[in-house]
Length: 377
Image: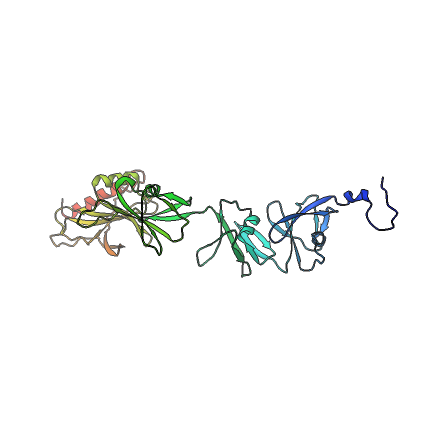
């Protein structure tokens, strides 16, 4: 039963106050800080939502509904929202336009020109263990920390992506990509394929600083600005020419590395001008050449062993003691500033390359056979 007072004013009867406010919605401002707002109807227009949020005029007010998917949908002043079926979360702010952006491919029309990294994280529901980057076309992507501000007033759609943080560390020519902000020096050497117990002088190079000696137990903080590389020098160096630590820019098959080590050859893997090379130092030559040893290189295809290795390259160019010209050595490859001459020596139709059985091991057998054939061995 409803009762009224006899004061003659227009106040709502006390029994009806609770009934008048039957529902609450969550309304956020430009900081995405939500507050609860009471409403007395489940069917409201955009203008009514703005007034319910406390705006005296709906002119210049942007009403965005936050859908269950996280998308933002513009609600026009005369457009009706049925809150019986729709989500009750809204962003309502003063704005004269919307700025389009994407976060991990999801599109948002945001009503404010300036956006912070923290707001992007909230808007895109980016977890704390990921870093947000502002994608750029002609320069590296820019990391956006929570306190950083981005101006959205630019042509086109501003695109943001999130990904796990990663750090790069060059260990004597081997580039590591690491997903933890710190690493122990011993672990870095192992990760790069070096034996940490072989005996090294180890130096950490930071841009703009003198190289710093470090120990195997030293912890490197990869977040330190300017970290460039770890440089290794063998401790046991005689008075002659100091040996250079072989480069290991990419890995070979286990069978290849084991074979090269058994041969006792100094070998390196490196990439120059997007070509991958296996470089063999002091490769022995049969009698009949003007030199007894040479540098020999094999070009390793990116899809090796699925793709075959063709011929081989030598530097300096090989010559026979007899003076006879060696045929089919017209290939060229530049490696460490030197021009290598390539021997076009391919497998015959009776023994084509087999990715299941062929490797650097069998290719070196072809190299030896080609070298011997020229001197009739």
